[in-house]
Length: 385
Image 1 (tube, rainbow, N blue to C red):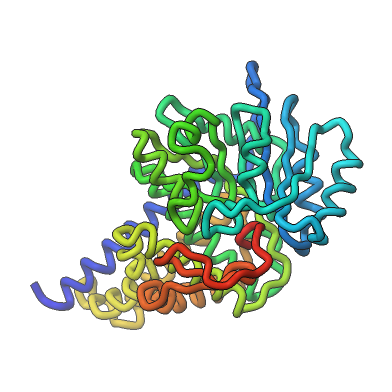
Image 2 (image 1 turned 90 degrees about the vertical axis):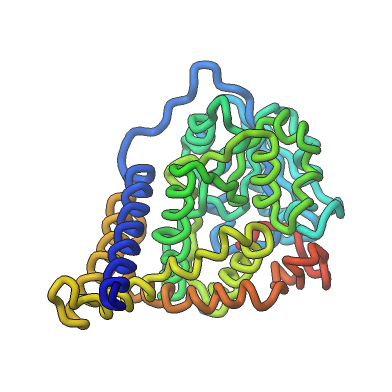
Protein backbone atom coordinates (compact mmCIF):
# COMPACT_ATOMS: atom_id res chain seq x y z
CA UNK A 1 0.00 0.00 0.00
CA UNK A 2 1.34 3.42 -0.93
CA UNK A 3 1.56 6.34 1.49
CA UNK A 4 -1.01 8.15 -0.65
CA UNK A 5 -3.48 5.26 -0.39
CA UNK A 6 -2.93 4.94 3.37
CA UNK A 7 -3.50 8.67 3.83
CA UNK A 8 -6.68 8.51 1.75
CA UNK A 9 -7.94 5.70 3.98
CA UNK A 10 -7.16 7.70 7.13
CA UNK A 11 -8.93 10.74 5.74
CA UNK A 12 -11.98 8.73 4.68
CA UNK A 13 -12.21 6.98 8.02
CA UNK A 14 -11.81 10.21 9.95
CA UNK A 15 -14.50 11.98 7.94
CA UNK A 16 -16.90 9.04 8.23
CA UNK A 17 -16.50 8.86 12.01
CA UNK A 18 -16.92 12.61 12.35
CA UNK A 19 -20.10 12.73 10.26
CA UNK A 20 -21.47 9.65 12.06
CA UNK A 21 -20.94 11.23 15.49
CA UNK A 22 -22.51 14.51 14.35
CA UNK A 23 -25.55 12.63 13.04
CA UNK A 24 -26.04 10.80 16.34
CA UNK A 25 -25.85 14.05 18.32
CA UNK A 26 -28.18 15.81 15.86
CA UNK A 27 -30.84 13.13 16.34
CA UNK A 28 -30.57 13.28 20.13
CA UNK A 29 -30.44 17.07 20.38
CA UNK A 30 -32.63 18.26 17.51
CA UNK A 31 -34.50 21.46 18.19
CA UNK A 32 -38.25 21.76 18.46
CA UNK A 33 -40.74 19.40 19.98
CA UNK A 34 -43.14 19.93 22.82
CA UNK A 35 -42.18 20.13 26.47
CA UNK A 36 -41.95 16.79 28.23
CA UNK A 37 -45.13 16.31 30.29
CA UNK A 38 -45.03 15.53 33.98
CA UNK A 39 -45.26 11.74 34.45
CA UNK A 40 -48.50 10.39 35.83
CA UNK A 41 -46.80 9.17 38.98
CA UNK A 42 -44.36 12.04 39.44
CA UNK A 43 -41.93 11.11 42.22
CA UNK A 44 -40.88 13.81 44.68
CA UNK A 45 -37.48 15.21 43.65
CA UNK A 46 -34.78 17.20 45.46
CA UNK A 47 -32.37 19.52 43.65
CA UNK A 48 -29.09 20.02 45.48
CA UNK A 49 -27.15 22.99 44.11
CA UNK A 50 -23.69 24.11 45.27
CA UNK A 51 -23.16 27.87 45.13
CA UNK A 52 -19.90 29.80 45.21
CA UNK A 53 -19.55 33.44 44.33
CA UNK A 54 -21.71 35.66 42.13
CA UNK A 55 -21.52 34.79 38.43
CA UNK A 56 -22.67 36.98 35.50
CA UNK A 57 -25.92 35.02 35.09
CA UNK A 58 -26.58 34.06 38.72
CA UNK A 59 -29.94 35.82 38.89
CA UNK A 60 -31.15 34.14 35.68
CA UNK A 61 -30.03 30.66 36.71
CA UNK A 62 -31.52 31.07 40.19
CA UNK A 63 -34.79 32.24 38.65
CA UNK A 64 -34.88 29.16 36.40
CA UNK A 65 -34.63 26.71 39.30
CA UNK A 66 -37.74 28.24 40.89
CA UNK A 67 -39.72 28.19 37.62
CA UNK A 68 -39.74 24.45 36.95
CA UNK A 69 -43.00 22.88 35.80
CA UNK A 70 -42.99 20.03 38.32
CA UNK A 71 -45.51 19.42 41.09
CA UNK A 72 -43.27 18.24 43.95
CA UNK A 73 -39.67 19.33 44.26
CA UNK A 74 -37.48 20.88 46.92
CA UNK A 75 -34.32 22.94 46.51
CA UNK A 76 -31.30 22.62 48.78
CA UNK A 77 -28.69 25.31 48.18
CA UNK A 78 -25.21 24.71 49.59
CA UNK A 79 -22.65 27.40 50.38
CA UNK A 80 -19.26 26.58 51.91
CA UNK A 81 -18.75 30.07 53.39
CA UNK A 82 -21.65 31.80 55.11
CA UNK A 83 -20.18 35.16 54.05
CA UNK A 84 -20.24 34.27 50.35
CA UNK A 85 -21.91 37.14 48.41
CA UNK A 86 -24.16 34.66 46.60
CA UNK A 87 -25.90 33.77 49.88
CA UNK A 88 -28.10 36.91 50.19
CA UNK A 89 -29.02 36.68 46.51
CA UNK A 90 -30.14 33.08 47.01
CA UNK A 91 -32.12 34.06 50.12
CA UNK A 92 -33.93 36.80 48.21
CA UNK A 93 -34.83 34.30 45.48
CA UNK A 94 -36.13 31.89 48.12
CA UNK A 95 -38.22 34.61 49.76
CA UNK A 96 -39.69 35.56 46.37
CA UNK A 97 -40.90 31.97 45.83
CA UNK A 98 -42.39 30.81 49.15
CA UNK A 99 -44.47 28.17 47.34
CA UNK A 100 -41.29 26.19 46.56
CA UNK A 101 -39.70 24.30 49.45
CA UNK A 102 -36.12 25.58 49.65
CA UNK A 103 -33.25 25.82 52.11
CA UNK A 104 -29.78 27.32 52.20
CA UNK A 105 -27.16 25.31 54.07
CA UNK A 106 -23.70 26.61 54.96
CA UNK A 107 -20.53 24.83 55.96
CA UNK A 108 -17.77 22.75 54.40
CA UNK A 109 -17.43 18.99 54.97
CA UNK A 110 -13.84 18.06 54.12
CA UNK A 111 -14.51 14.53 52.85
CA UNK A 112 -12.33 14.79 49.74
CA UNK A 113 -9.92 16.91 47.71
CA UNK A 114 -12.86 18.14 45.63
CA UNK A 115 -14.22 21.46 46.97
CA UNK A 116 -17.49 21.11 45.08
CA UNK A 117 -18.14 17.67 46.57
CA UNK A 118 -17.29 18.96 50.06
CA UNK A 119 -19.92 21.65 49.58
CA UNK A 120 -22.54 19.18 48.30
CA UNK A 121 -22.28 16.59 51.11
CA UNK A 122 -24.51 18.47 53.54
CA UNK A 123 -27.14 18.99 50.85
CA UNK A 124 -27.28 15.29 49.95
CA UNK A 125 -27.72 14.34 53.60
CA UNK A 126 -30.38 17.00 54.16
CA UNK A 127 -32.47 16.16 51.07
CA UNK A 128 -35.75 14.48 51.97
CA UNK A 129 -36.47 12.82 48.62
CA UNK A 130 -35.41 9.52 47.06
CA UNK A 131 -34.68 11.15 43.68
CA UNK A 132 -31.93 13.75 43.92
CA UNK A 133 -30.50 16.03 41.23
CA UNK A 134 -27.07 17.56 41.86
CA UNK A 135 -26.91 20.58 39.53
CA UNK A 136 -24.20 23.20 39.06
CA UNK A 137 -25.08 26.81 39.78
CA UNK A 138 -24.53 27.95 36.19
CA UNK A 139 -27.19 25.67 34.69
CA UNK A 140 -30.08 27.53 33.05
CA UNK A 141 -32.87 25.03 33.61
CA UNK A 142 -35.78 24.66 31.14
CA UNK A 143 -39.21 24.32 32.69
CA UNK A 144 -39.30 20.58 31.95
CA UNK A 145 -35.79 20.02 33.33
CA UNK A 146 -36.79 17.33 35.85
CA UNK A 147 -39.05 15.49 33.40
CA UNK A 148 -36.26 15.29 30.81
CA UNK A 149 -33.97 13.66 33.36
CA UNK A 150 -36.56 11.20 34.64
CA UNK A 151 -37.53 10.24 31.08
CA UNK A 152 -34.05 8.79 30.46
CA UNK A 153 -34.13 6.49 33.48
CA UNK A 154 -34.22 2.79 32.54
CA UNK A 155 -34.08 -0.48 34.45
CA UNK A 156 -30.32 -0.60 33.88
CA UNK A 157 -29.72 3.06 34.79
CA UNK A 158 -27.47 4.15 37.62
CA UNK A 159 -27.31 7.87 36.83
CA UNK A 160 -28.75 10.33 34.29
CA UNK A 161 -26.76 13.41 33.32
CA UNK A 162 -27.04 16.32 30.91
CA UNK A 163 -23.89 17.74 29.32
CA UNK A 164 -23.39 21.52 29.43
CA UNK A 165 -24.34 23.47 26.32
CA UNK A 166 -22.57 26.76 25.70
CA UNK A 167 -25.20 29.44 25.13
CA UNK A 168 -25.36 33.23 24.75
CA UNK A 169 -21.71 33.79 23.70
CA UNK A 170 -20.94 37.51 23.60
CA UNK A 171 -17.36 37.52 22.29
CA UNK A 172 -15.03 35.31 20.26
CA UNK A 173 -13.49 33.62 23.31
CA UNK A 174 -16.99 32.53 24.34
CA UNK A 175 -17.56 31.20 20.82
CA UNK A 176 -14.42 29.09 21.19
CA UNK A 177 -15.84 27.74 24.44
CA UNK A 178 -19.04 26.89 22.55
CA UNK A 179 -16.88 25.09 19.99
CA UNK A 180 -15.48 22.90 22.76
CA UNK A 181 -18.71 22.36 24.71
CA UNK A 182 -21.22 21.91 21.90
CA UNK A 183 -20.13 20.41 18.62
CA UNK A 184 -17.10 18.69 20.14
CA UNK A 185 -17.65 17.48 23.72
CA UNK A 186 -21.42 17.08 23.63
CA UNK A 187 -21.15 15.38 20.23
CA UNK A 188 -18.70 12.80 21.54
CA UNK A 189 -20.62 12.27 24.78
CA UNK A 190 -23.86 11.42 22.97
CA UNK A 191 -21.99 9.24 20.49
CA UNK A 192 -20.23 7.34 23.28
CA UNK A 193 -23.55 6.74 25.05
CA UNK A 194 -25.11 5.44 21.82
CA UNK A 195 -22.24 2.95 21.52
CA UNK A 196 -22.65 1.76 25.11
CA UNK A 197 -19.89 3.85 26.68
CA UNK A 198 -21.93 6.33 28.69
CA UNK A 199 -20.05 8.59 31.12
CA UNK A 200 -21.45 10.71 33.94
CA UNK A 201 -21.18 14.48 33.52
CA UNK A 202 -21.00 16.64 36.63
CA UNK A 203 -23.00 19.59 35.32
CA UNK A 204 -26.27 17.75 36.06
CA UNK A 205 -26.53 14.38 37.82
CA UNK A 206 -29.82 12.65 38.64
CA UNK A 207 -29.41 9.94 41.27
CA UNK A 208 -31.85 7.55 42.84
CA UNK A 209 -30.82 7.60 46.46
CA UNK A 210 -30.53 3.83 46.88
CA UNK A 211 -28.06 3.53 43.99
CA UNK A 212 -25.55 5.95 45.49
CA UNK A 213 -26.11 4.74 49.04
CA UNK A 214 -25.36 1.17 47.94
CA UNK A 215 -22.05 2.39 46.52
CA UNK A 216 -20.94 4.14 49.70
CA UNK A 217 -23.15 7.26 49.72
CA UNK A 218 -22.07 10.75 48.69
CA UNK A 219 -18.62 10.38 50.27
CA UNK A 220 -17.80 7.63 47.75
CA UNK A 221 -17.62 10.29 45.03
CA UNK A 222 -14.42 11.48 46.65
CA UNK A 223 -12.64 8.35 45.40
CA UNK A 224 -11.63 10.36 42.31
CA UNK A 225 -10.53 13.97 42.01
CA UNK A 226 -13.61 14.60 39.79
CA UNK A 227 -17.01 13.57 41.12
CA UNK A 228 -18.34 12.68 37.67
CA UNK A 229 -15.47 10.23 37.09
CA UNK A 230 -16.14 8.66 40.48
CA UNK A 231 -19.85 8.49 39.62
CA UNK A 232 -19.14 6.72 36.34
CA UNK A 233 -16.96 4.10 38.01
CA UNK A 234 -19.39 3.59 40.89
CA UNK A 235 -22.29 3.02 38.50
CA UNK A 236 -20.30 0.65 36.29
CA UNK A 237 -19.17 -1.40 39.31
CA UNK A 238 -22.83 -1.88 40.16
CA UNK A 239 -23.50 -3.25 36.65
CA UNK A 240 -25.51 -0.16 35.73
CA UNK A 241 -25.19 2.46 32.99
CA UNK A 242 -24.87 6.23 32.76
CA UNK A 243 -27.45 7.78 30.45
CA UNK A 244 -27.73 11.29 29.02
CA UNK A 245 -30.82 13.44 28.91
CA UNK A 246 -31.39 15.62 25.89
CA UNK A 247 -31.07 18.36 24.97
CA UNK A 248 -27.99 19.39 26.99
CA UNK A 249 -28.30 21.84 29.88
CA UNK A 250 -27.74 25.41 28.78
CA UNK A 251 -24.82 27.25 30.37
CA UNK A 252 -24.93 30.96 29.50
CA UNK A 253 -21.40 32.18 28.78
CA UNK A 254 -21.57 35.91 28.13
CA UNK A 255 -18.09 37.39 27.80
CA UNK A 256 -15.15 35.03 28.28
CA UNK A 257 -11.39 35.52 28.38
CA UNK A 258 -9.20 33.32 26.21
CA UNK A 259 -6.90 32.46 29.10
CA UNK A 260 -9.87 31.30 31.19
CA UNK A 261 -11.20 29.15 28.36
CA UNK A 262 -7.75 27.60 27.95
CA UNK A 263 -7.38 27.03 31.71
CA UNK A 264 -10.76 25.26 31.89
CA UNK A 265 -9.91 22.99 28.98
CA UNK A 266 -6.49 22.21 30.46
CA UNK A 267 -8.13 21.28 33.77
CA UNK A 268 -10.64 18.98 32.12
CA UNK A 269 -7.94 17.38 29.93
CA UNK A 270 -5.79 16.61 32.95
CA UNK A 271 -8.75 15.22 34.85
CA UNK A 272 -9.75 12.97 31.93
CA UNK A 273 -6.19 11.73 31.57
CA UNK A 274 -5.93 10.98 35.30
CA UNK A 275 -9.30 9.24 35.62
CA UNK A 276 -9.76 7.52 32.23
CA UNK A 277 -6.32 7.36 30.54
CA UNK A 278 -7.29 4.67 28.02
CA UNK A 279 -10.18 6.77 26.76
CA UNK A 280 -8.14 9.97 26.86
CA UNK A 281 -5.30 8.56 24.74
CA UNK A 282 -7.25 8.53 21.40
CA UNK A 283 -8.39 12.16 21.85
CA UNK A 284 -5.34 13.30 19.90
CA UNK A 285 -6.90 12.05 16.66
CA UNK A 286 -10.26 13.77 17.25
CA UNK A 287 -8.93 17.08 15.93
CA UNK A 288 -9.53 17.85 12.27
CA UNK A 289 -5.80 18.38 11.71
CA UNK A 290 -4.94 14.71 11.16
CA UNK A 291 -7.85 14.09 8.79
CA UNK A 292 -7.22 17.25 6.77
CA UNK A 293 -3.52 16.56 6.47
CA UNK A 294 -4.26 12.98 5.38
CA UNK A 295 -6.73 14.27 2.79
CA UNK A 296 -4.11 16.58 1.30
CA UNK A 297 -1.59 13.73 1.07
CA UNK A 298 -4.09 11.21 -0.29
CA UNK A 299 -5.93 13.43 -2.74
CA UNK A 300 -4.22 11.77 -5.70
CA UNK A 301 -6.19 8.60 -5.00
CA UNK A 302 -9.41 10.32 -6.04
CA UNK A 303 -7.89 12.56 -8.68
CA UNK A 304 -7.67 15.76 -6.64
CA UNK A 305 -4.79 18.10 -6.03
CA UNK A 306 -3.67 18.54 -2.41
CA UNK A 307 -5.41 21.95 -1.98
CA UNK A 308 -8.63 20.65 -3.55
CA UNK A 309 -8.67 17.52 -1.38
CA UNK A 310 -7.96 19.53 1.76
CA UNK A 311 -10.75 22.00 0.91
CA UNK A 312 -13.23 19.20 0.25
CA UNK A 313 -12.37 17.43 3.50
CA UNK A 314 -12.65 20.68 5.47
CA UNK A 315 -16.04 21.40 3.90
CA UNK A 316 -17.32 17.96 4.94
CA UNK A 317 -15.83 18.16 8.43
CA UNK A 318 -17.04 21.63 9.36
CA UNK A 319 -20.23 21.24 7.35
CA UNK A 320 -21.15 18.34 9.63
CA UNK A 321 -20.57 20.55 12.67
CA UNK A 322 -22.64 23.35 11.15
CA UNK A 323 -25.42 20.87 10.36
CA UNK A 324 -25.38 19.61 13.96
CA UNK A 325 -25.51 23.13 15.40
CA UNK A 326 -28.33 24.10 13.04
CA UNK A 327 -30.35 20.94 13.75
CA UNK A 328 -29.97 21.39 17.50
CA UNK A 329 -30.53 25.14 17.54
CA UNK A 330 -27.12 25.80 19.07
CA UNK A 331 -25.20 29.09 18.60
CA UNK A 332 -24.14 29.29 14.96
CA UNK A 333 -22.60 32.20 13.06
CA UNK A 334 -20.00 32.80 10.37
CA UNK A 335 -17.44 33.23 13.15
CA UNK A 336 -18.24 29.70 14.37
CA UNK A 337 -15.96 28.32 11.65
CA UNK A 338 -13.03 30.32 13.02
CA UNK A 339 -13.89 29.12 16.54
CA UNK A 340 -13.94 25.47 15.39
CA UNK A 341 -10.58 25.90 13.68
CA UNK A 342 -9.12 27.56 16.79
CA UNK A 343 -10.39 24.67 18.91
CA UNK A 344 -8.89 22.06 16.59
CA UNK A 345 -5.55 23.86 16.63
CA UNK A 346 -5.66 23.85 20.44
CA UNK A 347 -6.59 20.17 20.87
CA UNK A 348 -3.08 18.71 20.39
CA UNK A 349 -1.68 21.17 22.94
CA UNK A 350 -4.38 20.21 25.42
CA UNK A 351 -3.70 16.53 24.86
CA UNK A 352 0.03 16.91 25.51
CA UNK A 353 -0.69 19.12 28.52
CA UNK A 354 -2.89 16.37 29.92
CA UNK A 355 0.03 13.94 29.88
CA UNK A 356 2.83 16.32 30.87
CA UNK A 357 1.37 17.92 34.00
CA UNK A 358 -1.19 16.99 36.65
CA UNK A 359 -1.70 20.32 38.40
CA UNK A 360 -4.53 22.73 37.70
CA UNK A 361 -6.34 25.61 39.38
CA UNK A 362 -10.01 25.27 40.28
CA UNK A 363 -11.66 28.37 41.73
CA UNK A 364 -8.48 29.40 43.49
CA UNK A 365 -7.57 25.88 44.62
CA UNK A 366 -4.30 24.49 43.26
CA UNK A 367 -4.94 20.77 42.83
CA UNK A 368 -3.27 17.67 41.43
CA UNK A 369 -5.19 15.26 39.22
CA UNK A 370 -2.80 12.43 40.08
CA UNK A 371 -2.30 12.87 43.79
CA UNK A 372 -5.99 13.60 44.49
CA UNK A 373 -4.88 16.09 47.12
CA UNK A 374 -5.57 19.73 47.69
CA UNK A 375 -2.24 21.49 47.37
CA UNK A 376 -3.28 25.02 48.31
CA UNK A 377 -6.60 26.17 49.63
CA UNK A 378 -8.72 28.88 48.07
CA UNK A 379 -12.42 29.83 48.17
CA UNK A 380 -13.68 26.46 46.92
CA UNK A 381 -17.16 25.09 47.03
CA UNK A 382 -18.86 25.88 43.74
CA UNK A 383 -19.46 24.75 40.24
CA UNK A 384 -16.48 24.22 37.96
CA UNK A 385 -17.40 27.03 35.61
